[in-house]
Each structure stands twice: as structure tokens, then as C-alpha cells.
Length: 505
Ligand SMILES: Cc1cc2nc3c(=O)[nH]c(=O)nc-3n(C[C@H](O)[C@H](O)[C@H](O)COP(=O)(O)OP(=O)(O)OC[C@H]3O[C@@H](n4cnc5c(N)ncnc54)[C@H](O)[C@@H]3O)c2cc1C
Image 1 (tube, rainbow, N blue to C red):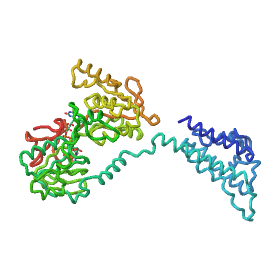
Image 2 (image 1 turned 60 degrees about the horizontal axis):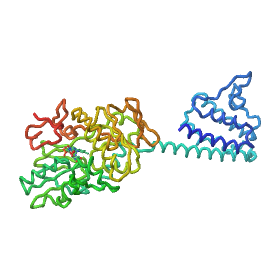
Image 3 (image 1 turned 45 degrees about the vertical axis):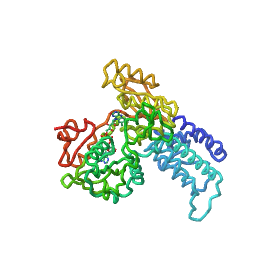
């Protein structure tokens, strides 16, 4: 950045001197110093007292100590224009003496600089000043200068991703997009009453509807998921799918026996459209996609969606899964860094990472557990054939160090390295900053890693948002839902999730 700024300033000064020479009474270097001193932080105009007059050391102009008005001996303007310029310079001098500008303010100030070069006001006797060719040419070059600096500034800011949207705005955009793709399109088509309501579109809900249907083949079951997809398997997202992938991100993978399989548990035809569920004589399973259950009214047996829609249930299963953890070091980082850091949990994350990797050459994966290690190997051997440098950074002394004995941990780490991953165990990111279009990670051992993208695979936490809003009990230490041995939290309310998220009493 400093080099860019230097280059911009040098070009501007060169242009300015070359064209300004004939109309200016000052030497080029004086002009340069004058403007540099005006606009560079802490470089204020120095005024030295000299009897009745002070000399501005930078511009060489005389400044009266009484009215602080600079005299310009050879100014080719009429008395009124001279007065205008004097007034303007006095004002500028005042500003410079009290508030030195920052470099950023200077650029903005340059853009408004043409003011002193405006046509001089007419005097009381209506005498028009002689047309000042030099001033016209001055104005032109100031405008040119301002345009160059503005363009340069915008370029620099763009390079530093300053115009990237905040995560909250991105989330709002995503929500809008979801509204256009959700099924059904309007909540009016969602049945207002169902015997079985399953909240969540993951493995737990899939297993639940299979169990319900095997027990009661004509049961009417409705799933509500905030994702846009039909229920699917998550495990292949960090494994086989990367070997089977192409740039379209098709959602199938090759099993160990070479047979290709869809990520989705059931074909779309298996499910009933939600608007048909109530009337279906043989029952069925419907999936309401792209909607969020906000809370439950466990007394009235109501599930309330985020848009206020109420659904009465006979029995409800809460199966909201977990939320991937991010790390403070990234959530507190500048926006440009945050925009290059993602977690990994679902199809949207998979597709996003795939598209990021199309233009990326390097990625850092933070975490040495199952997800981090699987993803590191998968990306290092991505099926598109593209070579991506993968760094895996984590605390433990080796891959899966938290779950494997020492010798297996060593063995696994060697296998991960063989896949082409640069494994950096016993490490931690202590600072994340922007480096051009990349992210610079400072590690606790003093090493620095510069990558195009970062994936945080640092575990997950129970998704208890619904519990908090519905006044369901949570364990004070473990944080999970409290249920009895039949997974019941309240009458007709059941909770199922990864075992850490529920606590039996
Ligand atoms: C990439 C990856 C690889 C994995 N690999 C393995 C593996 O190899 N072996 C293994 O045993 N496990 C693996 N796991 C873990 C396993 O996938 C999870 O344990 C399992 O998905 C949990 O299922 P679930 O249905 O409880 O929750 P989830 O699968 O998380 O599903 C929860 C669903 O509920 C939705 N939801 C949440 N709140 C609301 C709400 N308020 N309104 C509407 N919908 C809501 C969510 O969007 C989501 O669709 C992996 C996980 C991931 C992410």
C-alpha cells in the first residue's frame, strides 16, 4: 500500500509540475512541499515570526501576524479574486494549524480542492477580472489529480475488500434468497395441524419418520427444516463427495464398492407435497423446507414459525442438531478476514467451499479432529484434479489426538501428510489479518501461514435456541436439553440429537 500511495503521489506531482510551471510563481518543489505539508498527517505549516511579518517556510508566502492573511506578490488576479484566495488560504492555514489531516482525509480533501479555483466574485462596481487561463488549467489538473487519487483509493480499498458486506447483511440476503426457493412458497400451504411434527431435516428426523411409518404405515408426518434440501447424509460431505466432484457440485458419491449413490436418503417422489398431506388417505411424509421453527407453546401444543405461522401438533420431535463453532480470533477479525473464514456443516457450506477453491491455491483448516482431518485429505486430493495447498493447524500433537492412542495418532498423522497435507500440530492461530486478497495467520510458534481461505473445524455446540425460546429446561453445566429416559422434555415433546446435546434425568 505505501508503494501504491507513493506512486500515485509521484504521478500527480509530475503531472502538476509539468503543466503548472508557466502559470505558477512558485517552484515545483515548493508546490510539492506546500501541498504535501497541507495534506500529510502531522506535517503542519510552520510559521516563523519575522518582525512585522511571518514567513511560511513551506510555501514561501508572507503571512501578516495581525490578520494572518498571506500576501501573494505576483498573483495575477483582480483585488477581489486575490481576496478570495487569501480568505481561502487563511481558512486552510487555520485548519492546518489546528487539525492536521490524516492521509485518508487528505484524499477526500483533494476531491473538494477546486473550491479556491472558482471564478472570482464580481466587485461592487461590476468590474470583471481578466480571464485567467492559468486558473482554468489549474482547475483541470486539480480535477485530474482528484480523479486519479479517488480511482487509486477505490482500487486500494477494493483490493483490501473494504466494500465486502457485513456478515449480518449477508445473512439477510441469504434469508431473502431462501424465501424464493422454499417449499411451499407461502406458509398458507403448510398444514395447520399434524399428528407428528419433526423439527429438523437431518439424520435424526429421517430415522424418526422411518420408525413412525414402520409402526403406523398410514401416519401423517411433517418435517420442518430451515435448509432448502430434502433430508440428506452429512458424513460424505467431508469424504467421498470430494473425489466424485465436478465443478457443478453434484450431490452424489461413490461408495467403497464403486457404486454411485445420492446424498439424499430418499428420492423426491417419496415425499408428499405439504399441501397434500392433510387430505392424504394413506398418510405420508412431507418436508417443509426453508422455514424455521421459532419456538413451541408446549401448553397449547403449538409450533410457531419465525413468520408467526402456528402449527398444532399431536407429538413433536425436536431434532435441531448442533451448531459448528467458530473461533474468537476470527469472529473478532476485520470484516475482510471474516469473509474468508467459513465453518463446514451442510450442503451450502460444501458448495461454497467448492466454489471458493475454484479460484484458490491454498486453504488452512483449523482443527485436528475427524472433520478437520477428513476435509484436509479430501481437499488435498480434490476430484477436479486441481492442486490446492492445504495447511492443517491444531492444538493436539497429532491428527485425532483427542480420540486415538499415541501410536495410532502418529500413524494417522503420517497418512494425512502422505495425502499432501501440511500438518502443523501443537499449534494455534494467535492473530489473523488481511494480506492483500489473502489471510495471514500468525501461529503461536512464530510461523506465518498465508492462505486464500480458512475453514474452521473446531467442534460444535448444542443447538438449544428452541429450548431457550420455549422455556424448556437445559442442563446448567452441560448445556444440553434435559429429557427423561423416553427422550421426553414435556408431554408430547421429545428431543433427540447427538448424545452430548441431551442430558438424561
Ligand atoms: C461434514 C460432516 C461429516 C460427518 N461425518 C460423520 C461420520 O463419518 N460419522 C458419524 O457418525 N457422524 C458424522 N458426522 C456427524 C453426523 O452427521 C451428525 O451426528 C448427524 O448429522 C446428527 O444428525 P441430527 O439429525 O441430529 O442433526 P443435523 O444433521 O445437524 O440436522 C439438524 C437439522 O435441523 C435443522 N434445524 C435446526 N434448528 C431448526 C429450527 N429451529 N427450525 C427448523 N429446522 C431446524 C438444521 O438445519 C438441520 O437440517 C458428520 C457431520 C458433518 C457435518
